[in-house]
Image 1 (cartoon, rainbow, N blue to C red):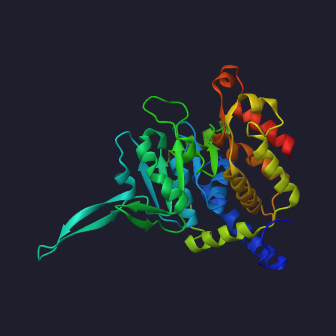
Image 2 (image 1 turned 90 degrees about the vertical axis):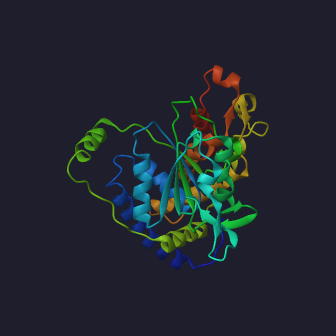
Image 3 (image 1 turned 45 degrees about the vertical axis):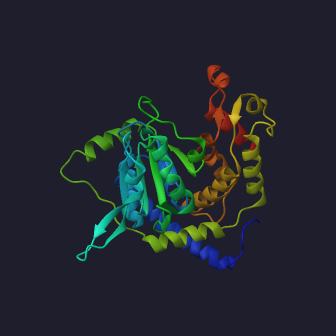
Amino acid sequence: MSGPATMSDAQLAADAERAGALLAQARSEIAKAVFGQDRVVELALACVLAGGHGLLVGAPGLAKTRLVAAMATVLGLDWARVQFTPDLMPADILGSEVLDQDEAGRRRFRFVKGPVFTQLLMADEINRASPRTQSALLQAMQERHVTVAGTAYDVPTPFHVLATQNPIEHEGAYPLPEAQLDRFLLQIDVPYPDSETERRIIVETTGVGEAAPLKVLDAPSVIALQTLVRRMPVGEKVLAAILQLVRSARPGSSVDPRVNQHVAWGPGPRAGQALMLATRARALLRGRLAPALDDVAALARPALVHRMQLSFGARAEGLDIDSLVDDLAARAA
């Protein structure tokens, strides 16, 4: 088995059982606000449990903001929302220095923190802002601090970004660069609801009152769960499947000729790290002590599609990145 063995198997199993019960309650509370999106909720929670960030991709009106608000309530985290627009500046996210003057006339600069100083940050329509503003989040997402005027300021712990992106409208949008996409642990596709779910949405959200989710966890509990995820054992078969999947998606090292011919760039080692953590988180969310090959297959798309780019010729021929990743995952598992 792969992974640190810093606690006894019995203690680990007991902690995982308690965590599974808490997480089942958390999912039940989130479901009061977000209907019929069980997979989306699971992936978003997996991002947080794995200590990473998530990119929610879906059309407007699919309850992405509602999901983040519900998660913040249920997980007991402070949260903030930033609406990204073309005129948004880095200081609007990070904060800025203001000049203060005391009664004696002495002047000094004081740093006023921006909305990034929260535990759960919703970056709404992140591709609407300029690359300069998008990059303002990079340091916070990777290093958990920001630097303003040469001084580093730590963001709160835990710190997670859940960004949204509209895949339909491209006018006035700036595609996220590869370096920033790679900072997102998972890309979470948010689909349209089915007929029965949409009927429930229409009925239950247009009345006088709505069921509100309740707090289940708090920040220290979330941090403890993140530590538990990193302590979970990973079998050699699962580790081998993760390694094979990531390497098979890279041009030049893949045995699939479609990858070597049509993939412009593939996932780096961070994709393997994302899969390693996310499979553990998914297993814990499903009440299991260790991840299985099914977890690798289920998380292949969310972990890889935003870390790969098809060539122009491949897109012209109709090659679909989702189908390609599914094929690679089936072969690895």
